[in-house]
Length: 435
Image (cartoon, rainbow, N blue to C red; front, top):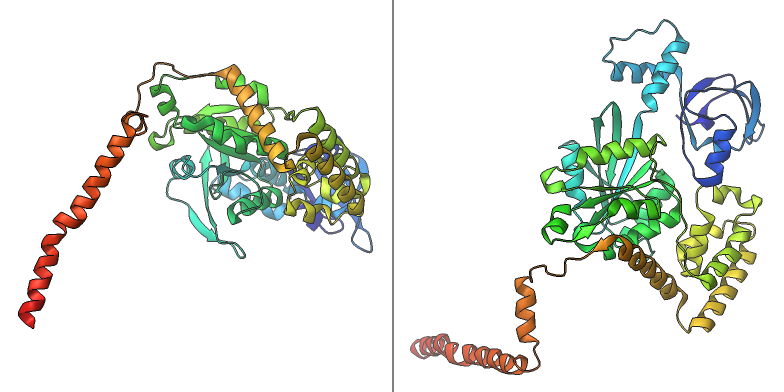
């Protein structure tokens, strides 16, 4: 349950701290770490803030902050221990029971699969989870998600296969749904499924996940196709460059799935050496605009926004004229200031580059991707040409293309009028006979 749900005098063991960035760091530094006992001293008359006792200190938290801390109560511990140990473990007292339950609860990992359509995301989901998924239709949207539960090396994974999307903009129901799920449900780890045969296009979504400041593992799917082409991809080097671990997989054959979830466990337990939060450099002028918008968003009065959203992410989205970002910052008391600075910076950038600010951000992302791949990806110059490429070379040739076009046009007319005459004559003869 959530820490905010405890009543006066009740206690629990911290099993998970959600949230992001500076908030999560501050909460952990205050002592809210896994395995620590926290007791409610008292709730304020208006239910906010709440005073807690942890590690010998008395600390007050806003209810919105306590909502992001998961705890295990004695009642929940009994169920977790029974499930995890098949009822064979009998702790000697409630305290031991709760500690044991908290240990089991800390090994529950919520994972979301995010990726482009046709990236093999659902195949990976089915291979990892078996047939234990069900489809949930969510009110207000026209898309659905698959959910499943499975165990791997002592950890229980709650895995959600989100709808395929090319980006996290606010133009389609799929894009909005994926964004809202990540912000509201706050999965512990996001697995970004990338089609290895179309890396550059797929990494655009990855850059948006980087901006969100969340834990991400890239499943480099269909990796066998990349190898068959003779291409060389130093994915570990790219992972170190952008702070995200990469794992090659072939989901249709079940290859790399175990290694992928090993990596998820390491990332969840903060043991992965590759993971670090990086900022995509959008260039001096755009970075100046992001910083200007970010300053009022980071104001202490906007705490309720900052614990859920990265201020840098919101600043970038505002520069992209994202309506959802305006709705989020609209709840801020300093929205008028944020809006004024945003409009000022958009106008400044568009005057400098004579281009729409949204396109400027997109171009910068692809520039970042191109630069990263230039350092880590080597295409096979002698790869075999596909049949479609050979056909295209002939039909679009400047000499052969026009005669081929005329040939196909003649065949079309011939089959329409010459061969089509036979069934027409048969129909006319039938009509005459009837008359």
